[in-house]
Image 1 (cartoon, rainbow, N blue to C red):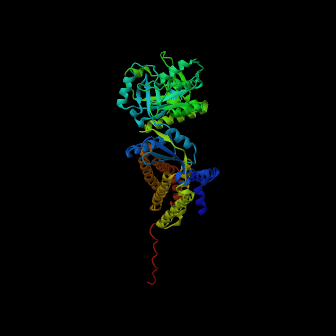
Image 2 (tube, one colour):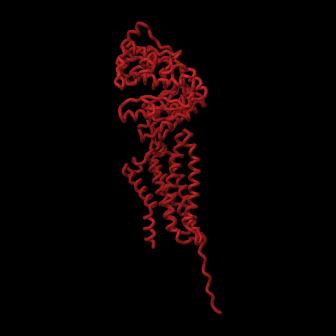
Length: 552
């Protein structure tokens, strides 16, 4: 009889699905090195990490420091980083820590922190739109397929005052370029070589701009034009003579000289000795990318990474006639070809989204050298945590067995809960298991056992003649209601918290409920129905038979 029940249980599709998924998860873990050797990715607390010191240009008040921490956390969450710890240190530093299990995180976080985040859309030398007028919650990435010639598209909505200023500024500027800057320098000179200035003479479509040196400089000056802010351009080959003849000096103590990393060291030393702060860029970043403006406005610069120029789309004439718009977009092209270009485009779009959502940092920052951070808890404590997880399941299961007065309940609950935890841990471990995720996994144990108690209770307590399937439907109604309420409650944390730690806990919780409702709960219900649905098992101890009566 027992063999028949076991065969019937394992021939059920729902049980087979749970079993196969669990075996698949275990196989994946050991195929990738085992749970503790690469199969699972653990966070800073368990495996150590890397720290990037963020150095503030000046000391700030506590409220400004909180704003900066929140800004950095929002940028990280928007960019899609799986784990980032942001901690203020005094009033001049912020530590940003990332897991060392993924070295790409370091370059990602350096990318999104390398900018103060000041966004400006400039038309004919005037700021038409600024980042302070953007609603952060409306920033989103859109498909470039609807925007000809674009590799990436980021859309957003403006506040009312921002819309009014935009309409006023661009009136009558149809087909003018809208120069879109992130962190356009305000106090700097640009030192560029002839080769870098004239590098991109031929567009991707094959058109040759055939620019002379003087024409290219004039186009660059137009792109950099902003009222009350001058950014002089000097040719690298001529600057040594100009330094001697003109007596060039920095305008302020913080004036930067934007220059190629490949420039002669002697020239760099000379600029430093004069008081300029060097801002060295790659040769690729120093090279302007040229394009054509509409309405016969000639050649423009579409992109110039060294000065933060991301793109220069031309204004649709409809936008310049005074009609307000609900949504605005930033479009741009990327570097590379084929798949490389698509990857770069996605990175650039997410980078811009993270900056616009987080907003501009109140003060300028610089990044210190990367430091290694030792694990706060270590793998031994992690193993103990997992053993504690298993122990908790056993204790709860024994309690359930005592409650129902039958050990037959224990094994199904243990196996189902362990299978669910293996699946959940494998999914989360593919990204990163940190403290928030571990808390979510531990919470999932309680949720799993609770659901199984509901199912068991309905079947075991049924009266003679009651349909087991009907009672199971009642149990699943309760379980589905609990899951729906929990997921709805977690939705605001996922969508609006902007904090990686909270998002991590909420994500694990939601995934746990989905796994339970879709896979483990139905599988356990089949087992419970087969084991307990064929007879009534009472909570009360069996009644003693009345003694036989003797005599007449």
